[in-house]
Length: 339
Image 1: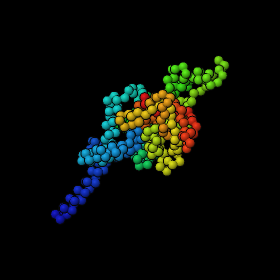
Image 2: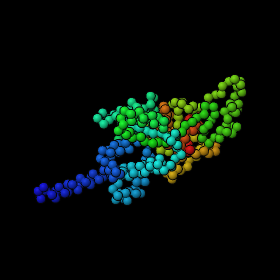
Image 3: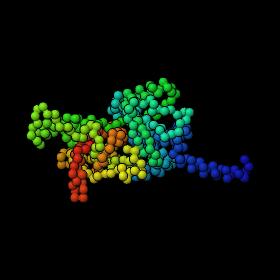
Image 4: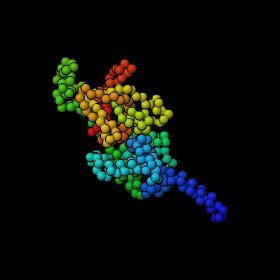
C-alpha cells in the first residue's frame, strides 16, 4: 500500500471498527459465537417473546460500567437473558421435572429454503401446538410448544432423517392451568376446601335444592372455554408487550388489543425478585386494580402461559369492570397468581 494512503486507511479502519464494535452482532461474537451464529442468535433472541424487558432506568444504573466493557443496552440485555436461562434450567432454579418440562422450537416458515435448511414441521406431532409472536423488528415468528415426550419423539424422528441437524430447542416453564370442572378450585383468595365455597353449598344458598339425579351446574370459566376474560396487573397491561407476546402486529394492535379497566377482590400485590408484580391471595376486603383483556383462543392463552412461566398459575377470579361511574358489571374470568 502506498505510504500516503496508510493514514487515511488507518483512520477509516478505526472508524469502521468502532462502528462494528457497537453492533450487537459483533458483541455476540464475544460470547463465543461465529458471525453466522451471532446473526442467528440475535434473530432468535429478538423473537423470543418469553424474555422479560429491561427498563431504561435499570440500564442507566449500569450504563457507564457496561459501555466501558463494550456493551450497549441490547447486548447487555442479551447477556442477562443468557445468564438467567442458564441459572434457571442448569442449576435447578425451578421445580420442573423432566416429565413436566416444555420446549419451544422456532419454525422458520418465512425463510427461503437452502441446502442446509430442514423442514422440521414434518417431524412435529400430528396436531402441533403452534402460536405466533412478534419480534422487536415487527416480524411475525411462529413457534411450536413441545412437551418432554413430544420433544423426545420429535428428535428421534428428525435424527433418523437428518442425523447432523441440531434444532434449537428453548427450554421453557409454562404457567399451569388445571381448572376443576366440579368445584371452584383454583380461585383467587378462596380456600375451596371450606364448606361455604363448595359448589353444592353455593347452589343450595342461591336456589332451591336440585333433585339428587340432577348434574351439578358447570363451574366457569371451564378449562377449555374461549373466549375468556383475563385480569392483568403487571407488564401485560402494556399493549406493546401484550401484542408482542400474542403475535399482534403494530398495524393491528389498535383494534386487536382492547383493554377494559377492572379490579379483582380477594387478592393483593407483592413484589417478586424485587422488580416484578405478583398477585397473591388475600381476604375479601382486599382489591387490586388493573385491566381486563378477552383472550380469544387457546393459542393466545398458551403464549401468555409461556410468558408468565411456572412461577405463576392460572386461577379463577371475579373480574369487576370499572366504568366512569365506578361500576360496569362483572364476569367470571381468570388471572395469573403467584404459584
